[in-house]
Length: 263
Ligand code: 1GP
Image 1 (cartoon, helix red, strand yellow):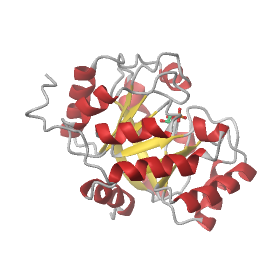
Image 2: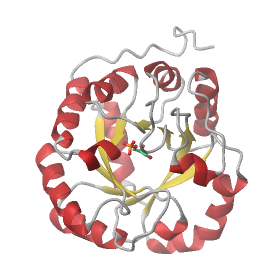
Image 3: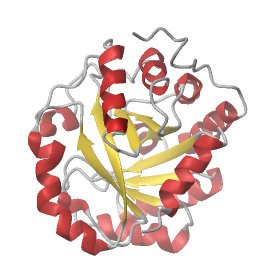
Image 4: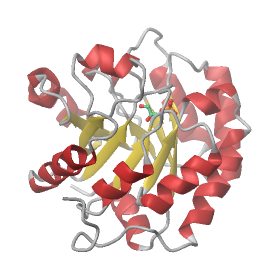
């Protein structure tokens, strides 16, 4: 099966081009607001759109995805909190395994139940090692997942978890402090993880400042995800995009695994 969306993510990484993903949570975004976000995303050259959330109270996820497909060429990746959040109209699905937790349901259980449905959807499937990191406050993701996030200062645990994910064959690692996290993930942890893996690294959760998005990229994030802050101030889309693009033109601060002394 072809993997155009994943290939694009890898291509960006190979070219040291940092990616900006805008997260749209259908529970917090009306179809009308989504239309505005499409326009802003097109203008700011957002690289990817993630759609999903930990809960799904509303029923317009599919409508938002269709609207985006109609008015934008930006690839749409489903970022599902549950198998209920799957629609064939997106480009790809982040097939998340919560490798930071020890809840078997989110490591493999839900996947077994949803596998036939997901295959039938025809979506491009991107297996993703999803890692929740403590962001200083309980987030919906940490509560719903019934798992303990990795402590924010345990960089070696995060690095080893990501390494294991890569060696198990996962294609992306997503470090997430959870939507609306009080503390975003530290650059030290991003750097420790990034230096130990070769697959693309996504970082999100609690990023409210373009400067932080820039620093995350410089620390080794290949893609930065922002949701909550943009819901509050859609004007940030442009600023985040500029900051992430600026990082693409500067050499990353990531050291090689041999020299960084992570262990
Ligand atoms: C959450 O990483 C995403 O899963 C984005 O987080 O909504 O806090 O930007 P925010």
